Amino acid sequence: MELLPDFSALLRWFQAADLLNSRIAAELQQRWGESARAKRTVEAIRELREKLRREILPWENGAAVHSSTVDELNRLMAERPMRTRLKASGKMPSTELYFEPQQPEDLLAPLAHNVALLFAQVDHNRVRKCDQCVLHFFDTSKKGTRRWCSMQLCGNRLKVAAYAARRRLRRPRITKRFLATSL
Ligand SMILES: [Zn+2]
Image 1 (cartoon, helix red, strand yellow):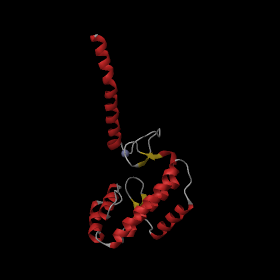
Image 2 (cartoon, protein in one colour):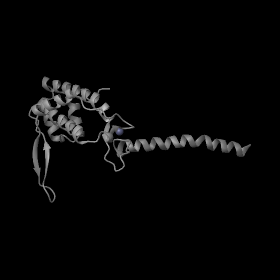
Image 3 (cartoon, protein in one colour):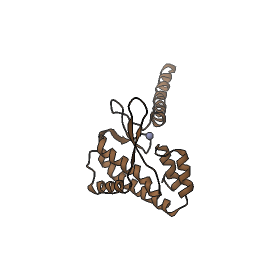
Image 4 (cartoon, rainbow, N blue to C red):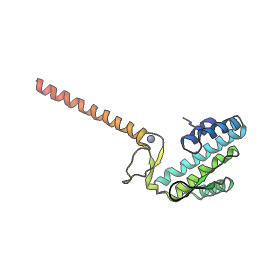
């Protein structure tokens, strides 16, 4: 099932990924929602997603990133640079990357940059598919044995499923004991 069928679905994904706030997403929907460029951007992003899927699955198992993918990410990052800003919160200011979409294609900027950071800075042993859903996640737990993307969503679902499975296993044993005592 395609979860990014159109531009508004793409904007919802950007909000869920914390890359755009709801006010800007609504603005962009109004400004570009019906345009051919927005449609082409959604297609370009879906293509990039498929290319990255083919790259990330073997990478999780230790394969090197293909040079054609490195070239493509470098091209995208050169065309769509991220901006840096200083954040003066807390004791020490910090910098953060951000992007300001001036045209639909600029939505590629944070995607290309974050994938580049993933390949460059993340241990591939800590990235894996969630046991419960289609997402792949970066395991930041101490032991590195997490099996789900989020404790709130899939962790809970997994616990509920395990509980139901234990109950199913227990039931025949109770029946057997019941039979034994009644015989
Ligand atoms: Zn999940």
